[in-house]
Image 1: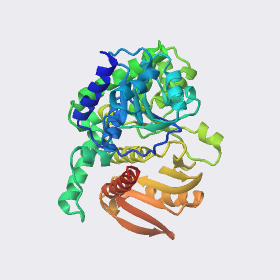
Image 2: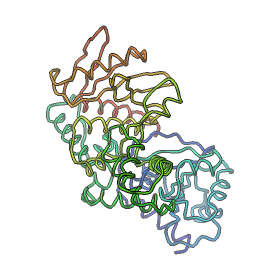
Image 3: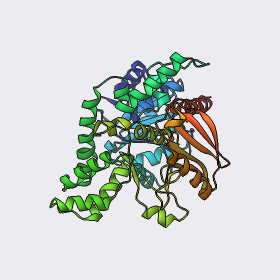
Image 4: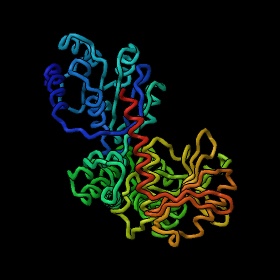
Length: 434
């Protein structure tokens, strides 16, 4: 297809697409390139469509090119001038999708950016391009915008579930049902929108991740060890994950693999953001790095699909972490877990400006009697050790301000905690569009 026909046709195609809202924080800046990154099938391209629609961009305002489509481009740097010929003005926004398919893409993007007259958005395939690679190749001139599977707030919007306040019992039960459902089937857009059966999606998804994003990309030959590591991580979801144990198990089965290779596999899984390896908090950076991490899959549905047993508490814990990440907190920078030598454990330690701001414990409890005392004791102990006053106990359906040993613990139902975060996210998003 010739480029002029393509540019015009693409705008018509985007206009016809039904795009669901994404509540993702970012600020426009012509001094930096917006790099859209995230795991496979999380909706990176559709996020570009959403930016176009949410800002009410007209045909003359933007240029959109997907470099994996069959188009004839002689000189990519001429694209803004071709746009000017067609619409009378240069585009203010330039969207470059699947940028890795363009030869010498770094020079092209850098040259467009140097003009400082466009808002530039780029996406790259997770099997070809990672966030850190984009940042390195563009010499620090790119700002990453992370796109993950839907948050709960985005899921409610996508399913046209409108929260009417004050909340009644019907609304609360709808919220709880939605949370239960998606802790099981997950939050990937295709699953939420019913485009594919969850079991089919996750079976094919993991195959794609292993073969396209890892084996093909990195030229890995030890497929057995990689698959075993992935399945071990999934079966250990929300628990401590030890490469040494994986190595010992593989060795006992006669597999030839080194610990170094397994640690490299773990780093790859982290880089493509299929798993998060959450470290134990300590004031010593060295001890943080040497700690045994807890592993969490990028989606609750992915973990549930491969899990032999389903623990509501663990599903809730998993969901809470993912919501914190989708809100912009970074594992091992803003979020850690805490554990002392006596095995007292707190699910999440939240840092702000390197200061412990909040401690969060998650439990599947609907009454005070169902709350295990060791969970409360761990919160109190950690609050003293880390000098933190904000103690939150996320429950399934129990709410109370508890005073224990002169410490206040805010017990709050998961649905209410999620709703508060959704309200804050929507408020920020509305302000950013003004």
